[in-house]
Length: 291
Ligand code: GUN
Image 1 (tube, rainbow, N blue to C red):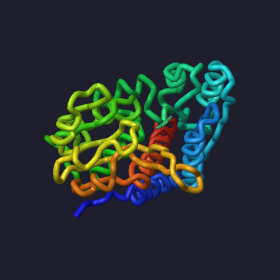
Image 2 (tube, rainbow, N blue to C red):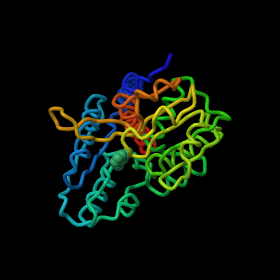
Image 3 (cartoon, rainbow, N blue to C red):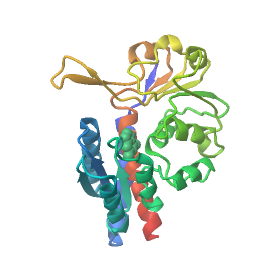
C-alpha cells in the first residue's frame, strides 16, 4: 500500500498552531504581520500571493499586500522594502519571485531586514542555515522535512536524491537533510540538468525529492521499489479545462505511485505545506522582534 501524504491536512495542523500563537500575541497587544510584495503581473505569482494573503486572514495574521508596477524601477522596489522594514506592524516580508528582468533579485533579497526575512533568502539567513544554525528555514524545504517526519520517514543514514539545485528548494533542503540536527543525517546527492545518468542515481535512492520544475519528469521506472517520493513541482500545462491549463507536479504520479511506499501528490502536497511554513516563519519573526 502506498501512503499518499495529505499536505492539506498536515498544513491545517500547522495553521492551528499559528492561530494559537496569534491568540497569545493578541493577548499581549501584538498582531503578527506579514507583508507580501509583488512586482509585475505574472499570473502564477499573483495566484500564489493571493493564497498567502487568504492564509493570513484565516490565521488572524495582519496581511499587508503591496503591488509594485512592473515598469517601476529597482529603486522603487527597494524603497518599498525599506518602508516595510521600518513598519512595526510588519514582522515578516516576502517579495514574490520571479521579479522583472531589469531587477536584480539578489539585491532585493539583501535589502530585506534579516529578522523579517520570512522566506529565509537573505544571505545572513542562508549562512546561518548552512552553518547549522538556521533562523528561518526556507518554507518549501521546511515543509518537506515536516512531511517526511509526518510519514515516519527517518532519513538517518539514507540516500536522498534531490533533483534540482535551486536556491529556494534544492540547495537549502540538501543542507538541512545532511545536517545532524532535525533528524537529517542523510547522505544527500543533488542532481541537475548536467547530471549524467540521473536514472542510476534516482534508482539507488531511498528518498527522491523532485524539484526541477519539469512536468512529470520523474517516472516510476526511475525509482526503486519502496522509494519515498516528494514532489515539489507545480507546473502549468495546457489542458482542455475551463482555465486552459492544469497543474501537474515534477513526478508522474501514476507510474511513481506503483513503486513508491510514500508519495506526495500535486496538488495537495508540498504546496499547502510551503504556505503553512511561511506563517510559521512569520510567528517566529514576531517572537524575535517582540521577545
Ligand atoms: N516564488 C516561488 N516560490 C517562492 C517562494 O517560496 N518565495 C518567494 N519569495 N518567491 C517564490
